[in-house]
Image (cartoon, rainbow, N blue to C red; front, side, top):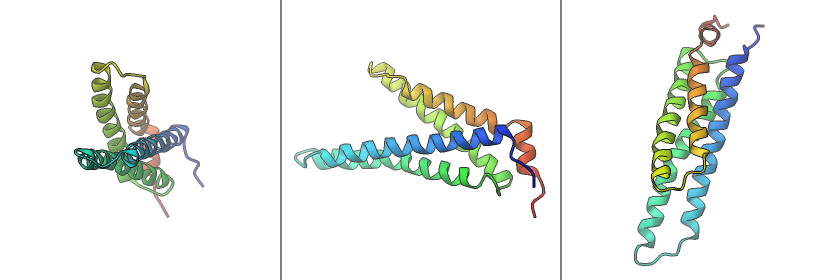
Length: 137
């Protein structure tokens, strides 16, 4: 039995971190929506908060499913990991830029950019490619 290289294990762990972070963000938005009162604009704001939670939940599910398939998956799993890392970098960069311009930046989104970039780097290394291109039984 071939053992999973360290870079692949690290990419898998970071994907789980991305999934957990997106679950937290999604739950935070849903809790914010649940605590609002419906009034003149309340229903619209609640709908927008729930709509904003959807991409976070979707990315969380994708990251966790892809991380689960690292042991048996092939080339497409590696491409999926790169895609999740790319979406994390792009989305977190946009939110970090917005937070900086609103003077609300606390560094969490910058850390998400770094984690997404690390997922991309670890998923494109040669030993990671070799792991996903190996022959399966």
